[in-house]
Image 1 (tube, rainbow, N blue to C red):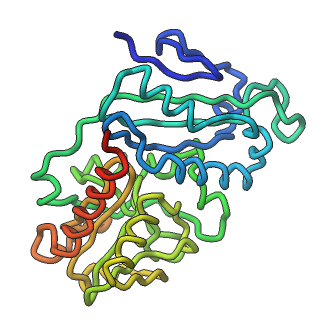
Image 2 (cartoon, helix red, strand yellow):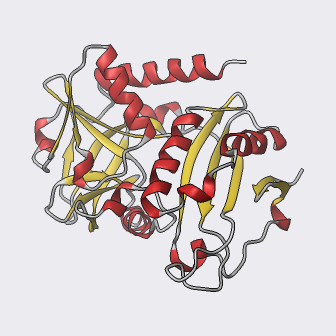
Image 3 (cartoon, rainbow, N blue to C red):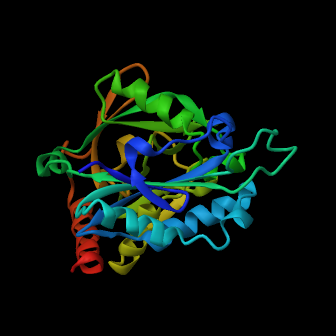
Length: 293
């Protein structure tokens, strides 16, 4: 059966889904997206993802256009239409079609696209070995509000991931303009130092992930301290463990970090550490509880 997508109120075959060449998302990157994961046919933390998207819509002037749209139902219906249990789900919302420039005319109705495709989790061995991460040469900007939203203008993070992939690394690590740690190419990063989680503050120029938020809550429930602040590269040699988070990979240990020259630091003993494993397990228990049939 051909994959089904949701486009502007209709569920249609992927081959029949087309966007206008005048869509402001295509022309100007004027749009937002959320990547989510479905388990047992249910999208985990869907409400939080929709909330984050709407908060970002307020920043870029899209909020009014989303009033009356049931984005949650659109996402759920797309997963159901494809009869998927484990899936990667993406919701994209743009300013819509318009022949005028965005600052001249507000364009028409927003474009709403939802896609859902089967997802095969990474192997268990990968969560033991962890990610090899490389610092990218491109930088995030901490002083720009646009750095805090997940817009379809995702070129900076895309280029960063392409750069480190050529080095054979699993994920990029982006610094900000001051040389402090911001985020991963498509993830947030945590370090464990003296038993406490250390993670860059949102003011460092990162997109605050939904999974990041949940991990902070879980750590708090376990009595694990969390420190959000300015984090420099010195933490690589000071920490006992490190991990990255996003909705798709969940909680992924980081066992090696390399800079632009190729110089590497092994984190801990080069394998997933006990605190990271505890949070991996707690997160998956939360998923199971929230998505069980």
